[in-house]
Amino acid sequence: MRMLRWAGGVIRLDHIKNIHVRGSLKVTPISEKIIEGKLRWYGHVNRCPPNHMTRKVLEMEPQPRGRGRPRLTWISLVHKNMEKLDLVNETTQDRRIWRLCVRRADPK
Image (cartoon, rainbow, N blue to C red; front, top):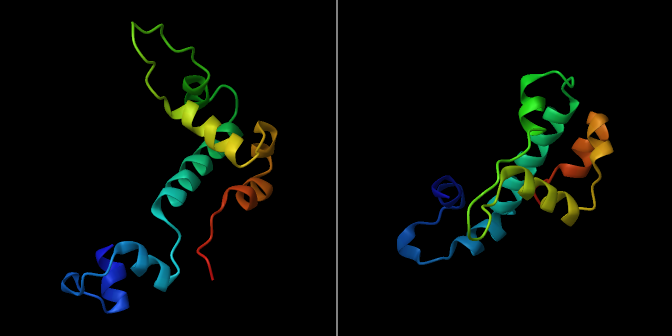
């Protein structure tokens, strides 16, 4: 955020909110960029051969948990983000199409 403020010529003493700085410089929100990064990595791992170490770890069964609410896992968040974007698992095999579906470009 500091770099965006510097690029926009805004200092903290101006009391301008971060949302307004991002909007004026037309930058995608950081939460969308994080989702993009997770989905890009998921596609990369899914394209690995089935006997690759990361693929084996991804397919491991989770251990049973104790009482209480189950913790959020990385893979559950990825599946939730895929549902939100209407993506299917088979799309990961074609790198070009997956990148087009997942990429969140900065608004113009």
